[in-house]
Amino acid sequence: MPEEVLNEMQPETPQPEVKPSAGGKALSAVKEWFRKKVVALKVKPQIIPLIVLALTTVCFMLFLYKFSGSIAASFNDARTKATGICIFISTLLSLLVLVSFLNAFPKRKKPNIFFIALVFAMLAGILACDIVYYVQMENCIEFNGVGSSLSLKVEPGQPYMIAHIVLLCVSAVVFALLPVYGRLIKKINTSKKLESATETMSGGIDIEEE
Image (cartoon, rainbow, N blue to C red; front, side):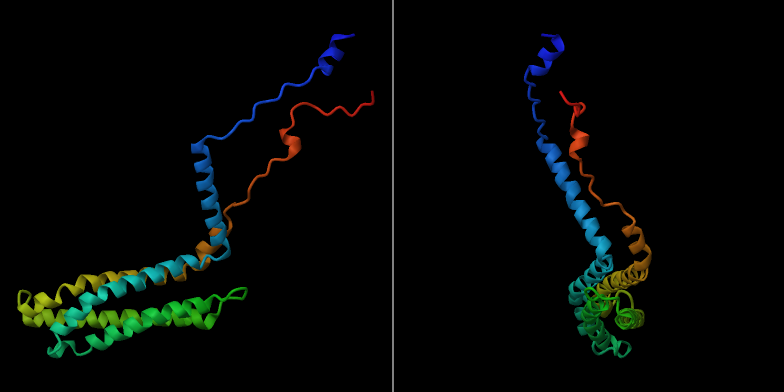
């Protein structure tokens, strides 16, 4: 019997299955998690400005303790008459702007232009109230003196108001640039490469008749 025939009759030795290591599995899981997040962003890129806007609202709510203390200390000062109403309006609009943002992007529908414009209008209103609060408190500090007892009670809220103004500007910019980075995100390749059976087979396929 020829040697070639004997080699064909011998059973093939099974190839040991290569199992991925624990580190490889963890890395694959992390990559898959990021891929799914990018896919979600490609479908709904408005999640990014929503997160920034929600963070701005949460920070403002945490800053209210400082603002309320400054308002209570300067309640009888003639230069801070509008600080209380400004903080009230900012608080109300900070909550309503999130509701308007959610209504601006309804599911399976085109973005609502009215609510998009309303979001920008609310952000402008909050910013205006913050500026009025900050200016009146600065006038109070300047009139009473930097080292006075009243100024020492009012000053702690000023840095927090500056931080909130910065966050508002960042939120407005991120929201305004949504069409730009939304298109860039959609260009990211998130497809998974599937290995076919023919690519993994070793050797050729014998289709000749015996």
